[in-house]
Length: 338
Ligand code: NAD
Ligand code: ISE
Image 1: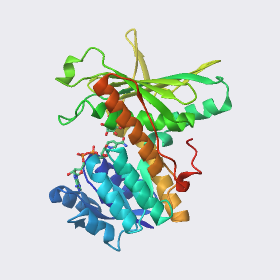
Image 2 (image 1 turned 45 degrees about the vertical axis):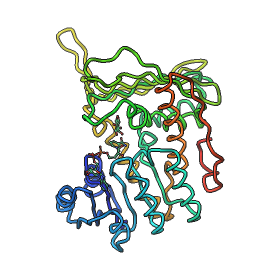
Image 3 (image 1 turned 60 degrees about the vertical axis):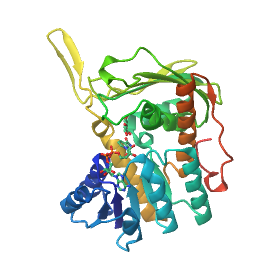
């Protein structure tokens, strides 16, 4: 049984505690921590896990074999570094850290440890629709890919959400997905700002991002974070001989009164419910079998941060911003993403 300590017991922390307690096999939540002690205490009480006063104390505790970090992005680096220092595997929700420099510090610490400990929560790689899309691409039936059109729509976002978060917090999922889907790196980013939605107050929403890949494939991503009607994730690849797109997520299709309708998920928890389950079960199984994670690595976290930083610069300047990655350390040499 893998004994897990969870740092950050807000929305996604509680959801991951629920799945590790009630859905998945081979795992038990043995400790929780949050800067808000009351939140941690109530999340821990629901599953019989003690609440620790600090993330560092949780990491050091012998009841914890592996750590899950679900606190706010700017706090990820400190906990991931502490877990590496303790020699414990750590699953970190995206982003790995909020700057590429911080991601490089994590890579340096993991390389000094001499083996993989870190996995980043890019769950789209575990989603049945994205996996099916990648499989179709792999068969060559639509020919060589030329372009991909993506949309990432949230019904609404919290008040603290700022315009750059459309890149660093939202489109960062497409950044990782695109690298994985095409086994390729993003080499430049542009960001356009369409007419502003009145539903987002002063927020510059939506955005239109354009990624260039080293193969020449172009990927456009619309982020709309106040779309109201639901959570809508789209992706269509245009190949030389055909197209392939993510299927409908609706469990039921209704036709009545001259109208045809599908259900639209409310948010990421509903849309990616199964992807998170598969992501965590594979993480647990890999740790129990080999002691090491096999999913998105600290290198993937760094590469996503480098593209995201370029996106923020493109948004600020209106320019096309190239993405320059550092040399890939040997530890990550065998990974699929080129
Ligand atoms: P949230 O605000 O609901 O929860 C975050 C929790 O972290 C809060 O309870 C807060 O008190 C706690 N916290 C803040 N600073 C802390 C610190 N220094 N130490 C310990 N706890 C601290 O936010 P959320 O929506 O649950 O997001 C948390 C993380 O998960 C973010 O990095 C976010 O990007 C990521 N996330 C990922 C997905 C996904 O689809 N993979 C979805 C949502 C959120
Ligand atoms: C949130 O943090 C997530 O990761 C969701 O998957 C994404 O859709 C949302 O835009 C982010 O704020």
